[in-house]
Amino acid sequence: MIEHYYQIQKINLKHNMLPHMAAGAVCLFVSPLMIGMRNLDFYQTAKVIEMFFSLFGILLFVPVFMPEVNESVRDLIASKREPTGSLLFMRFLTSLFLTVAILSGFLLALCFGNCEFSFYQGFYGGMANCLFLGGMGMLFFSLFNHMALAYMMPVLYYLICYGGGKKYLGKFYLFSMMWGSFEEKHFIMAGAVIMVLLAIAYRSWKRN
Image 1 (cartoon, rainbow, N blue to C red):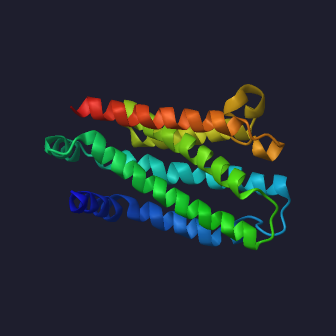
Image 2 (image 1 turned 180 degrees about the vertical axis):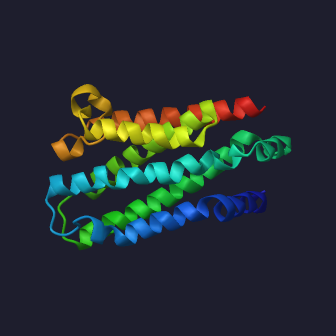
């Protein structure tokens, strides 16, 4: 059984996640050149985490459903004895592990850069934003089977937050830490979990 799941994860990494892993690694290594990561105060560090790293959620979680873009692949997956929901959940766990690894590396770079921040708040807030944007992309792909829409909607939400979102989005405003508030992250994390579960459940039901 363990060998079976290992092979599934291996195929997912090789044929689905490899380009996104490479893009994430490149962004991580060039981030010191793209944004300031040294001697930042708490609010500047929160801004870097929320406005830069949040985008990794779109990069790493939306591809969970990417193999299903091809109808022949969807039919092949549906014909296997392995439940579709299990396959999707294992792909999600792969993306989750990659996000945790990259975020941890990103936060360690901030630590070595002598930035002022709480590692717990930085990690939780970064993961909440990533899961929220990624979960939104997963949900839209699950509902409409359209990869462009799956990328576009979380990007649009991000841009709304970047604009006047603080006034209109309330507890689901992505950039609350840079304004000194952490409470919103619990609502964002809850919303993220709900969207991910709905996306996987609906996609599984649709294929069975």
